[in-house]
Image (cartoon, rainbow, N blue to C red; front, top):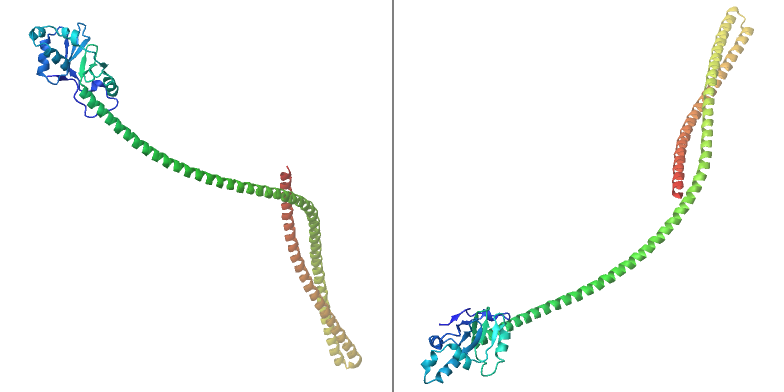
Length: 373
């Protein structure tokens, strides 16, 4: 039986090599008797030929089954004699050109080479060299099946690639649509950014205008504040002087009221003395009247006593009027003193407020000097 070096591959690809196919191992040396070869061919009908090697184990020739059978039929007489001869004798007379290909040759390339042979050798087996001294036979039907499988695999691959291309084209179309959408979005964003830039530019100009207005206003405020500071200093200086004068005047009024109170106390003392004298006069008048009645000289002495009583009455009346006047002066003096004290408190408050305002002006002046620096 022929020996298959590789079982048939169920699925082949475009990169399948000859070494991957079902190859037949049947090679003999050139000294092998023809009858051995014929017997092997008769025993194994699947053998399509035999490879004959020379003494260096290189291919000398290849004999097909058909060539061997034709040679045997051409020798009806003396066949036994010829079968005893070495196979090399048959190669010399009946060997034809054969196709020798390396094992790493592609199936498609091998099929192209095989089918380009002459018509009389187109169906001969192909000799495949696997090593320096290792050769195999590749039958044409096996090569045809392999070629068909490779074409089918190639077609499937092309179909897969076509489907992949269609899918890629669809994805590219989607990407294109997304890119167009992105482009539209970018244009819209660009327009929005442009509008925002315009708005920002307008806002910047407004801010610059406001800044210029604030600068002018600040300069005006500084100018006015400087004027107010100078005017305020002089005004508060005059105010302090006036307030101080009012305080001095109120202090003098308070001192005068105190002096007036002392004088009124002195007047009250004098009034008390007059009242006491008037009492003595009335007592003297009473005693004089008693003595006049006792002595019987009521006429002249009584008149004197009567005048003394009148004098005592007027003295009492005068003392009462002086006392009333002193009391009224005392009340007015106390009222004036209270008013002066209230006014002094108001003036003191104004003085403190003026001091606070002066401090504020001094701080304002300091700020103005720093702003000018």
